[in-house]
Length: 280
Image 1 (cartoon, rainbow, N blue to C red):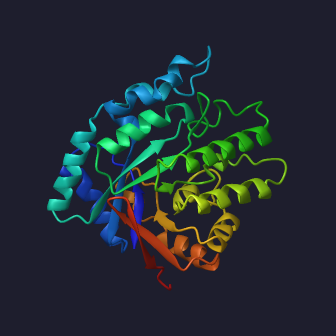
Image 2: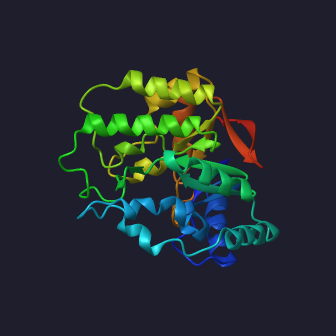
Image 3: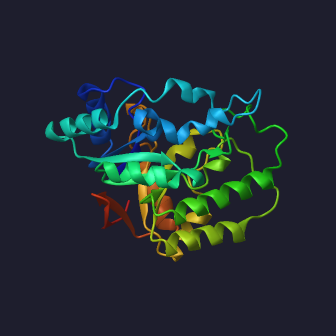
């Protein structure tokens, strides 16, 4: 079993810290981990994000947290993960990159410059609004249907960008429990159809179970539709600390199987391999 969404940013960039994630993975029956640090931790990606604070309106602090990031180099990151491999950690080198439609060419250039096993594509920003940072910032007074529609449209563009291998936490827009007022079944179905056409994978992520929404990403109904369309899946915890590695992966597998999924995928040098989901 895999956990293909792990962040090490809350500790030192050293082998001992990475080994703590691996120790937890092994204790939970995980045989391979994917380290997928956020792109905003790296100096090389700072130009991709600068528009967020340059375009921020007066009083909007939703992107202010980014100022303390961009402290590492990608080379430093790659060297650390290679050290981990040499120390016997079964890991894949990943990256979680935010999608910005007007920065596609710059993102593509950076991704081609380095050797990753897989790249997660994420949408965390609508304009300069960091919608999943703090519930009290930006959400009050917004029209929920408009927010959901804008989010789905941006994920569709990410799917068409040919930048990513996996789309992470597909319905993360629900993170704080805000729900669209009308049913958006056709919009979600159109997104999944596009993902299938673009031959992308999606995550089944337990991170939502630890968030205010208290629900797996994506909703089981979306997993069921993804299975019908033969969209590949990965399994993910979105761990930011060792304690969360492999969090409730058995529950994720059970939901995936109940939804019709029979396999999951791993990646090596951005090539996908299918594996049978275990029977629990």
